[in-house]
Length: 565
Image (cartoon, rainbow, N blue to C red; front, side, top):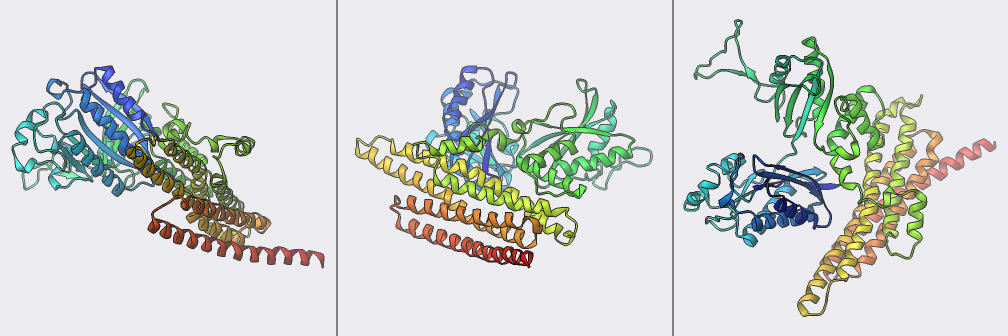
């Protein structure tokens, strides 16, 4: 899964469409960023923007949006129902896919520095990026709201993390941070009784429920406070409500850390509790978008419970999750629209959306991209797909029960590796396009020439990073092919051999593309380090491929000789 970052800045303007549209245009003006949603509220006088992009471009989009908001919003005139203290009130980064929280913290600090220095706005860091325990939560930083900022500017303990320690009457102050993805998740019950839904919510939420005696009275502790029975799940905020449109109640919740408390685990538990109460869960609902990892984890969980192979395509795994959790119960669940990574890919992953004939036709034209780098990545995808196929054909075959678990591992790893290489097909072409854009930059003045050279060096490094990553993971493809050949269905051994050949082609093709792009790099240390990485990765892949080829020839020729006897 690709590295993506979600950014959800909240701006203190929900009524003036011209201002809202201008901020949206600022986000959309950054290449590589997808604006997913703009949600204005007139009563709150606040608009929430949601956009997604790669880590290397997301800060540019956030800065552009904040700069436009600071330019157009005057906090001294702002009134609204929602708590606020700045033109851009809060701007969190959320890791998606393979992005880590540590990376998002670094992005928050980079944006904070740019906003503080470039726009003269006081910036406070919160959540995972917080520099003080007392500034962990947004509420703690925003205490007193905009009206308290003038006084805070005179107090040393309120010196911001970035920007001037003085009152900015027009822009106020901004809070920037990194937090986990929040999933708004509802589980549907076959009842109109809201009390039953609330009873389930009390048992699962992290805050739990009040402890009561046999008479139903609250139990008071020695400290004079009512005792509580802890709930089952951390990072779960839940209650019960009745939805007239659906004609049923729901256990409605916010899951604030899906890595600790994923929706499918909560779903299974609610099904058990509901049965104890004489109820049935009819399905569930995810409000808004969801990371692919959430759906993949759920699908793999249910496939395991079924005893089925988990080495299926991503769409098949997601469909398993949709059906198992009843996500289409009250409203359609369209994976291409609901899953963040797939929503972002629409319109961007042009090459992998083509038919085989269309892709070959595109390759044959006189344009330099797509080229060998994309083809090398595609060979990697074919290699991983073949290994996954052999694993699937072996998983349930009689006589191979002893290797079933290993086939499951190979199948899952092959499917995920296939997706990585498939993504790299388009990534390689986009990286080349970025290099072409840098070459088109003006070069009349010394300053323009220097900027163009710097941009070309950076774009060239990006053009190297894609095939270098492909080369680095080609060894995984070769190893999967090796395991599939030695352990898999004997009738598919030749398929595993072709998988190894494709892994070798992937590695060599990616290696060529690293070398040809390194010619344009002036940084000798970078060149040497990159060459060392490339040489090591190629040698590792070729060694495994050679071992597979020796094994294949021995096995296939031996079988042929035996048949001729």
